[in-house]
Image: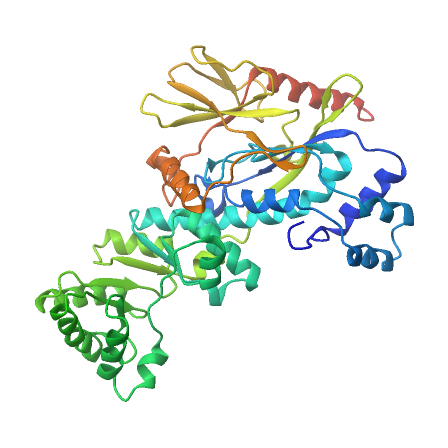
Length: 480
């Protein structure tokens, strides 16, 4: 994969691949990648990581040193290693558009390929999509909590390693962040970069005023002064006001940052001092272990904050350690057609939805999301008809939807015969897709606490396939 990452896979993928190769078991198959529950106890997720996944899959290749390493493990036969030398992904991938709002148990990606090819990419796909979707979702929650304000991603120093930091910056931007402090992410992804100053700048000079003055002289058109090194409401804001007045005389504007203390109280006092000094256009930035809950509280309390610097809790997805993404076989080709397959479980929520499927999103008259329907690929889901939406776990539970304005299929071709089959959008366009989708999601699903649960249901035909397979397997159990 991209950057010599073919070995970025769990060992059992390779051992299974060798077994398939040995027994000539390599049919055409279909896998779904989906997740089981919303992170952060929320009501939605933001799909992210698709471009990185697509690039990685299409650039998949085993290099000489990869083969040599595998040979040294003494697990793999020469004929299988020789097979890997010319290995590439030749299949198709369908996916939702990056930046889409997504929900549990619906396919985000649908992989059509040989069994061996599909098996190899599993770990990479999950690693890429799970992390970026998690971070993009966290960023969207922060963005919404700020009332669609300016969110600055400041998480590099607390991120989980170099790759984690870069992926987090990308995903945070998709979710709604305005800029990042990570200059390498800015270079790679074209994300706007922003920064202020550290306490060390203030401490490096003979006094606070001199530090502020020198910074403003150096960056007059982007002066943001960190005022809490010594005393935010004493020398900090007083010295910032002095510098702000000098900037105003030159036609420039002041910014201040708070990084500690009671942010509601201090920001209100700072705002008063700035306004009283005639610096009403000065902006206030805050940081210090912020997350969506703290930001929401500050906004609700009327804290006069303009910019939100969010680091640790954003890039490490504070509150949830991972997205519950999984990758499951749903169909395999026989002599005549793709035969649906199902994974059973003692936990009904872990029983998979079989068969090759499309996801249809229904919209109401205000062009807001109404519900999603999983249907068999090839089903005629057309506007103007009423549809039964079946509960994915309870066979006879359904609701009928007839009052809708439009229907949209969400899965489209992204990789065709091993090659990228769509125009890769710019990152800013992906962010705009996120913001557009968020506006089409009712506020009840966007609540931070106890959000409404969005309906993802099965079509009548898919319901029949699923429960017929369950009944068939139960009949085949000993003693049944």
